[in-house]
Length: 425
Image 1: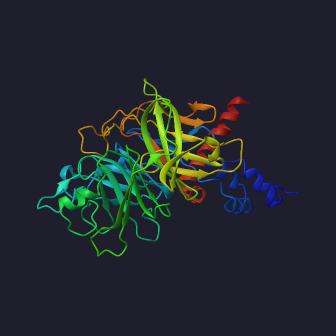
Image 2: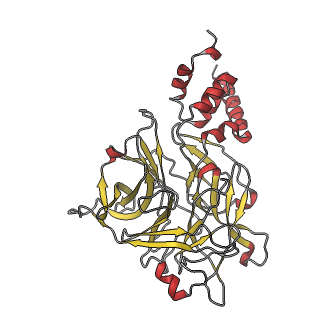
Image 3: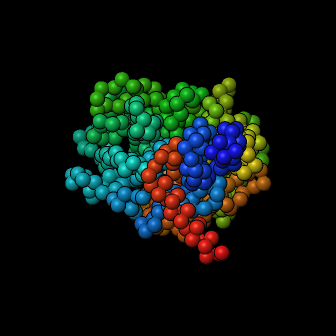
């Protein structure tokens, strides 16, 4: 029997063990039939570690523990601080050079697709419903409801320093706006819709336990849910509802935590809303995580054990954490992957003077994964980035199978392997 005529279940069984996208794509490139089978048995959507730099940006693959040369950063994004990562190759940059010279410094935030080169510029101006317009200086994280390339409307939210500590935007708007239930609400009205305590994290949940919208978590572990109004007039954006929930842990903790709380993250998984709490030692190194599930009756956070997250792997990053459904494979057991978050100071998203670090070098030593055995230092930890904190890069497998830059990289890797084999032989 020719290799190309292997039964589909045999080919699918081999693919089941190929979790690294370059390996997967090289296998799929053997012949047309294997490629067709590969498109019917795609691997889990898992992010690469995105390590930007002003000199040489690289991507780290978790399953194979190798560094790959991924898509090339646009020239005007070199040196940018990245503050968001989304599906289909989109990332958010806190600021890049702007063509509009009326913008202070000719720089503005932007959404960039590193695979296609698409770009969506975001405003730096904030409509505060006062005679003057303020300019946003420190964007901590950008959260999207959908990616720009998807064929439906999308909204963006940003955690920022100062007041408001969160702002919103949609395509067609020249300014960002605070959360308003009615257009042109005055300062005293919209400030009531803000979290009074520092914002820890935010995420957009499509079908959340408290309805769809932007879920915002503060350092008191309370939730605010902002639901954008879908039928606003062009150039306007208001909220159809803003709901606040004071939540407590159930049962209440009777013992102190394993360390100081560094941060809290929101993750949606299987229709549930999870809060992941991160603990650090006195040396500020991550030592443990606790995971809680939102309970509605009564509204509270219920602690979970790690084994209840079977077949799921959580990737943490402010504003864009996600849970990936994994195959049942000993190669990639359920874990919580985390990045260095020490640049996010206490007080981010509040009106205090402490804000997230906005200039390099950015530390990257506190990375790794949390599993039942404890903390494992399995990710790169150096050198510090000169331009941006590390983040994740989400490249769906079907994109990897078709992108020209990806196939060129595979050819280059194949040539390097053949050269190495020739030298070793």
